[in-house]
Image 1 (tube, rainbow, N blue to C red):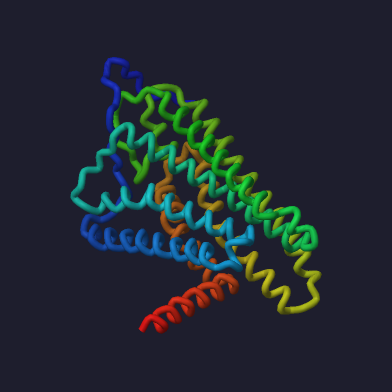
Image 2: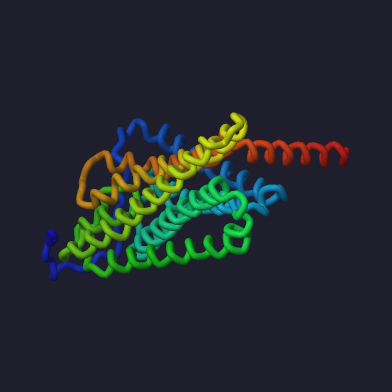
Length: 319
């Protein structure tokens, strides 16, 4: 509802300066190393999941693991949009980002992030069908339908990212150009606009906050039905396997959605906690996803063992 400075005589901004995360200067080398390792491990971990799903015939034909492979692919790209730029904050490199680079970062961040939101919902729906409708599952969720749903999530995410980028950068920016954040994201960029941002804040609240919250509620509803169905399973081993598979997904959903909702349902907030919360779901969550799915999912661990054993067998046969 606010209207920022009316500085029509000032030149339009052609570049922004990302102030990054507040940190003591003496910790720069340590923080550089920490985030560099996080980025490398995120790429390697998600690549391992992606290759495992692709290489194992028992996994890549099943919708659940097709969705898991797509999630790993998204995590790799989302991390690449955020972390390399963040790492530069801990070096002597310039913090300047061109206007077009800021537009691109905001678009891809929201494109990939919203696609993840939709994907998590699809994964919950897949688990709901597998556990609550086991006899009809092969018909209700087959490879073709799964591909169509994933494609729909990508298209919806692209539309969402485009809407947010267009609405954010249709506003005039005439100075100052210092973004008090570590990436070009909507709340931080809007604070620099030289115009009324009421419409943008409303769209941010509805299109991001409410959509994310709605997806989260749909996921919780799916899992309420799943838990009810699991409790009807007579064997302890069957219940354990069902809870293990669903527990992995529910853990990932929680560590992604809760911080996201915290930030975007409070679009006007200037809390110093926002940066730390945003780092968690944009930087740490993509690192945790492969760990959660490999440590809690028995089928993925078995596939990794088969893949490793196969490679060792090939090496032994070549000697």
